[in-house]
Image (tube, rainbow over all chains, first blue to last red; front, side, top):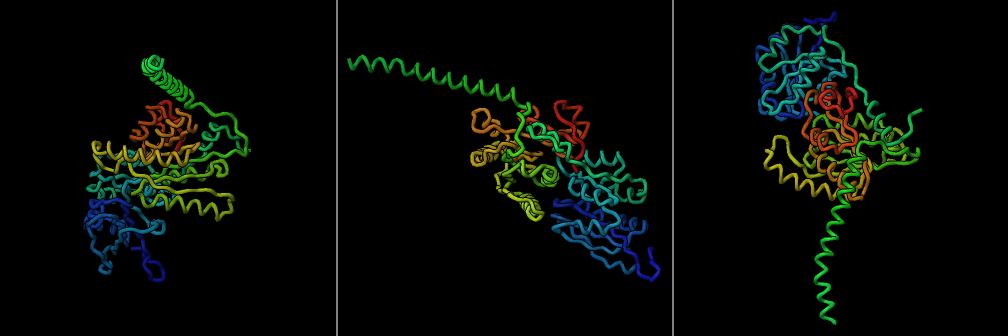
Length: 179
Length: 232
């Protein structure tokens, strides 16, 4: 399971993030035996959960007994480092988390929070899933997505561009075009 | 003689008052129609040195990140001084804006002028629409206070409810002649098929001079919007 030649185990980290929200349903299901088993079977070694404002506390584990190592924390001033060192990201459907992850080129499963009223977040997740930039799941179907996902089929996301907006604004205000 | 004079004045002052009132209403109406007519029409050509004071409305969640992304491609020497406003309960947005302005200073941009302010929220996420009426009035009074101080020439916003009182006041300033401004609204990237409440209000009331959307589905639904692709 990911042994390098010098015997040091290669870490493949799954990073779960709920951003600044409270999303106990995702934290709970990420910490469930079903999901952890499926992740372990897909070759992941570590599970790191950023639990935000939630109240459910995952169970820490060192993973020495041939299972997933589990750790968690509430917030961090910047999750960029955690995203960079992850092999798979499982995130709530906030646009900030989604685009930060896509721009780093990391495989992403977005889990939509069904408890939110007027859930506009799902629009973005579903649109990007349709364009094959990420997988979209609900808390109860997460384990199925993990088992069946083919990360090689994901299409890399090209970063957006704000210059069309800037051009229109400058033109409207009567500023000269850039040379 | 005195008695006649006082009778004359007491008879004509109601007429005078009414005349003044009607004149006032007419002027406001004409100004209002003029502003509606000019909304969305580009301004005249500008000399390169001219600067425009700019109000930037920030919001929690992805709003501030998207706004910073837009500011990165706008010439800072044109849009200055910059005034950042965030909701009082939003702790991170002003911090992100300060970091952005500091990075400009670090990279050698000269003559940076930026101010950071907080405003009472019209409505918290999840707050009932009924209680929101009162909080919106309070927020509007606070917005009026801030806008009188700032009187921006450009307003940039991208969705949070905090922008509604500010944009409405900017529009009123145009009508009463306090300050002419150009109002730009970029609907959030998270809005693919439906506009946010702020977006819907500014689109329907035609308060924004230019209304930008990031997904083609919205441009089909709201034809006066400009489709500009994803900013992030």
